Image (tube, rainbow, N blue to C red):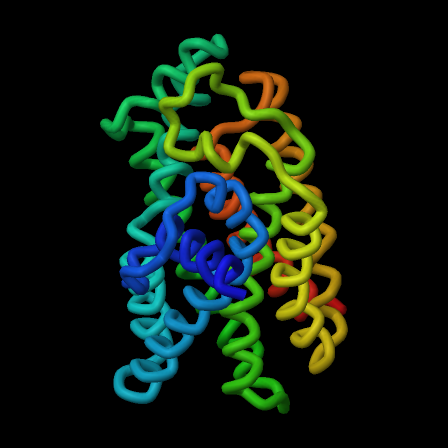
Length: 265
């Protein structure tokens, strides 16, 4: 039990800025095993974002509340995944060889592709999440519960899509300089089962209230498959930035597909 708690807090420390107990064993191998809890970290980030949304939706209004919830999630994660998305935009936008793409992504400076990409990504996220919450709010469903499940599902399912690339593809960089190198070494069935369990449970509960939401799995994982193949073709695998970009794109795809499913099915 102590070991599992250490692994969980390792995941929490690596993927968020949330303070953790000081007596955690920082075994390097734990980061490799922490991938099983990556979607569970999404539950926590989703709960925090939901709490901010509910508070400011009551005090101010839904549009500002959505924006503040997005800002909160960025602060909680330290813009970890947004940074990866920006690096991928810069790398694949400005590089034409594996070596050049990896070199650009390793650069901490953000370029035009990254800046424009992040701006458009956040804009789409803001508009789609606002629209989705508005549509579900007009239904006869229990609003607070549905809102909670939408937040948690978006963050957990997108993280499952991202971490599943680790299970199916090879790490691209040949050196150990990347911050995500430790999670690329190996995995066991525990990491696979744990990631899929924590990644899918919120969606299954959400689908209990409205079965159509289960269909969001299709577009989310189609995009995941496309991105994994795209990374494989250009750089021969994935990097930590690729996982961050996948998480961000799949989160947006979840919102957009949920809107389309809610509207037409």
